[in-house]
Length: 201
Image (cartoon, rainbow, N blue to C red; front, side):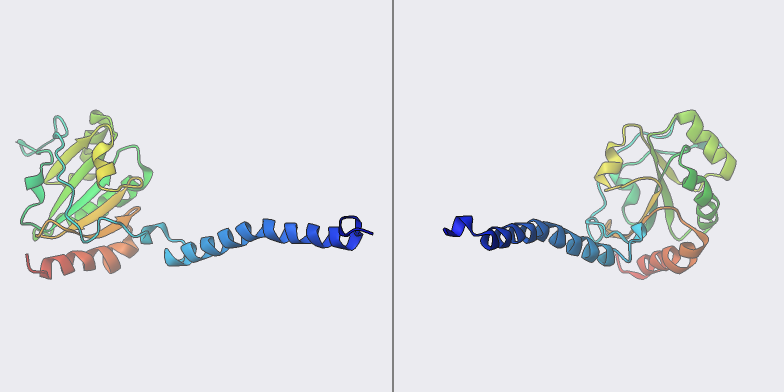
């Protein structure tokens, strides 16, 4: 009997093919587990940003039309906005539910005048954005209207809200994905701001 006709040989070859088919699945599963744990047990707020440690994008955005503070027009965003100051840059929108939840904390944070808070209003209707700030109070010294979302892409934004800490040197020192919460406000964000304030320009 030839080897081709041997039922034992055919069975062994069939089993070998099944094992070979499983190899890509095993490799993919191993990589998925590794990726999960490297990202802080799946916490999206721990996703590393390629921009941390690098210069903040040289973003130019128009002002949010009609936004004023005691008669003073709130400016838009230019590359000069972030120069020489510690800045907290918050990407937000009125249609974003978590943005409503974090807004009171941002307003509280704005009482500290050692740094500035700058807003990037993401794909929002101007009237809705102004109403949002009228409801919670405006924590921003400047607000750029990112109507088409291109500037936010330059900042590596995954989705709103996101918050960046930018040092006096113009480099991004920290990125928070997701809303500012009572927990991360005290333990993470304020600590990162203090670190940026202590750093030499």
